[in-house]
Amino acid sequence: MLEFVATDSVRDKAPYYLYSTQLRLIFHRLFSRQPQRPVVGLLNYCTSGGSLEFLRRPSVVQTFGVDNWPLFLMSSTGKSTNSLVAGLWLSIFHRLSILLRDGNAYDTFQSLFDAAVCAYHKDNVYELLNECKARAYSHRVWELEFGFQNPKQSSKDPWHTDLRDCLLATENGEPNLGVLRELQHAYTSGEAFRVVHRDKAKAVMKNHQFANHPTRPGHVIVWARHLDSSRRNAQGSWWSHIPHSRPYKCTIEAMQGDISEADLASIVLEAFSSIARPEFACGINSGISLASVVQTLGS
Image (cartoon, rainbow, N blue to C red; front, side, top):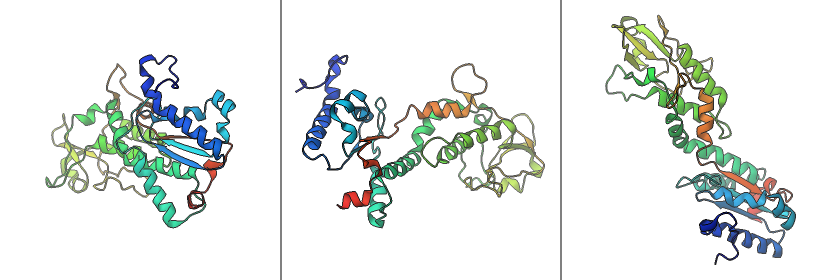
C-alpha cells in the first residue's frame, strides 16, 4: 500500500503521507481526463496544510502543470499544527449558504475563503486568546479583585476582556497590531485604570467595575471601561473619563523570562503563529480563485 508513497527522510512515518499521496493521484487522473473541470476541496484535519504543498512546489508545477489545474484547495490548518475539532467547516459552509441563497455572482472562491477565515478566527478567538494569556499578563491587574457595586451583576476579568476585544477587532482574521498597541499604551499610561477616592467615585461605580486599592485605604481602582464593555465613546475610545481620578499604570509582562515589560503585539504574533490557521492553494494560472462561486457551482 505504501510502495507509491514518497518516504525519503520520513522512515516510519510513511503512513502519515498516504492520504496526501492518494489525493495527488486522484487529482492527477481527474485533470488528465477532464482538464477543464473545476474542483473545490476543503481538507479539515490536523496538519492538513501539508497536503497543499504540491500546488506550490516548483518541481511539481513544472512536471505536471498543476498551476493550470482548476483546483482550489483549502485546509483548516498549516502543515505543522493541529486543527480545531470543527475546523473550517462551519465558517465555510455558513458563508457558502449565504452566497447560494443571495445569488451574488461577484463573490469568488478567493473572497469566499477570505470571509470564512475572518469569521473562523472571530468564532474561535478563544484559541488565540488562551495562547496569548499563557504568554503575557499584567500582574498589577491580576492581583486585584474587580467587581460591581451591585453584587448581583456579573463581573468580568479586565485583562481577559480587553485582550479578547482587541483580538476580535480584525477585518481579515490577522491580529490588528494598531489596536494591540493602543491597549498596551492604555495600560502603561494609566488610561485604562484610574485611582479615585471612594467618596468621589459613587456615580462612576454604578457603571464601572472597581477594586479596592491595595495600599491606599479609602481609594478604589476603577476599570475605565463602561458596563457595556464593547461600547466606545465619541472619540472611538473604549475608556471613559473618570472625574477626580489619577492614573494607575500597569505593565504587561511576559509569563516567562526576565523581561519586565513585554511587547504585546509581538506576543500576539508569536501566539498567532502557533494556532490553527487556515490556508489555501490553487492552480494559479487556471483562474479558479477568481471564478464566481455561484456560477461555478450552478453550472
